[in-house]
Amino acid sequence: MISPLAHVDPSAKLGENVKIHPFSFIDAGVEIGDNCEIMPYASIITGSKLGKNNKVYQGAIIGADPQDFRWKGEKTFCFIGDNNVIREHVIINRGIKTDGGTRIGNNTFIMAETHIGHDSQIAGHSVIGNGVTFGGNVEVDENVILSSNSIMHEGSKIGKWALVKGGCRISGNVPPYVIVAHNPVRYYGVNAYVMRKQGFTDDQIDDVAKAYRHIYQSGSSVFNALQRVESDVKPSNLRDEIVSFIRNNNLIIVATQVDLE
Image 1 (cartoon, rainbow, N blue to C red):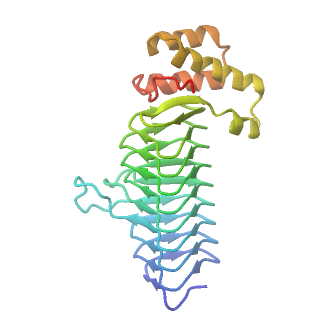
Image 2 (cartoon, helix red, strand yellow):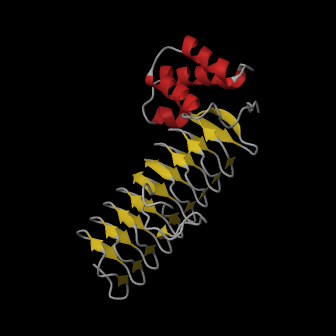
Image 3 (cartoon, rainbow, N blue to C red):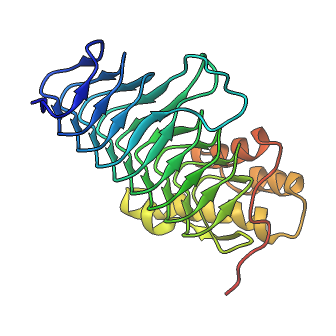
């Protein structure tokens, strides 16, 4: 299952039923789990560890050297989980320090020409559109959709079940369960359609919407809005996740204006 026209370093560790197509490059010390497929001209660089059932398409580079002047050549890492699809010409950089590293979870679809910067974390079960750009240290929680050509500036955090529309520039933190759109980016509502398709009840979605009405439409400070959320929205995991995300990120959130169009 390994083409003689591919370069596979003798120290690379390959699982069972791995397919390595012609002209792909597997560097020293790379680990690739069972049932992975590496398409032509893809490169897996030293420090990369792939789980099972991943498919890496033509021209993608996994574990590229970090594009950060703080990296001084240390041995660093890029970890890819299971069941991911990494499309053409995606670049995923390793971390800049030996501890930590860039991490992609399970079941994420990363579309063509996306660039994921050093030490970024994608929890999994997400869709990353064509040409999405990550700075370093971006954190993306589970079940997120980042539409094509959106930009995540360094240190941004995206909460679970969020949807970032195409072309948005995110320079802060997007809380869970919302849609954001436009530039400057604005709150565009609750991600109700996707949530409903994935089994959330109408009552749960209504509670999320009520919480964000306090945050984005009350005209009060974020601090006061969170107090209103806690007093007006019945206790639940969803409510607590919203409040916790905002409080744990220094009350900084993007899209402080409401789109009324």
